[in-house]
Amino acid sequence: MPSVKTAVSLPESVFRQVEALAEELRVSRSRLFLMAIEQFTERRRNQELFEAISRAYTKPPSREEKRFLRAAKRYHQRRTGKDW
Image (cartoon, rainbow, N blue to C red; front, side, top):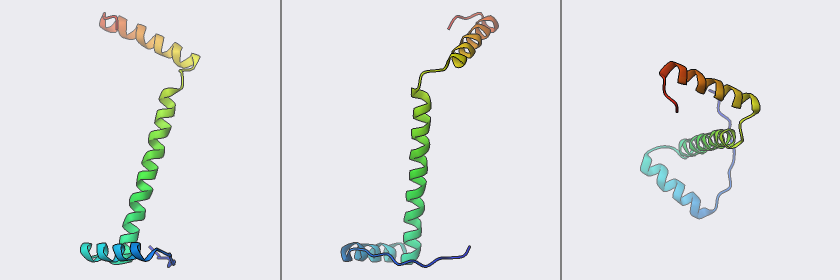
């Protein structure tokens, strides 16, 4: 995959932390930044998915969904003989 170079300005204290961590992990600064950005974007995608799922479950069911749920309940009761 082709690479793109970019310049990033950091406070000196953060730069020193990055240098130390890259050395500790035995990776380049570029690799460390890539790892961090990949992790950040993955967490963000997961958070957005979680929020979308939460919105879907918090909105009240539509009339069509209610009819489907009632029909599914009746079907289940007939098949199992149980009233849930």
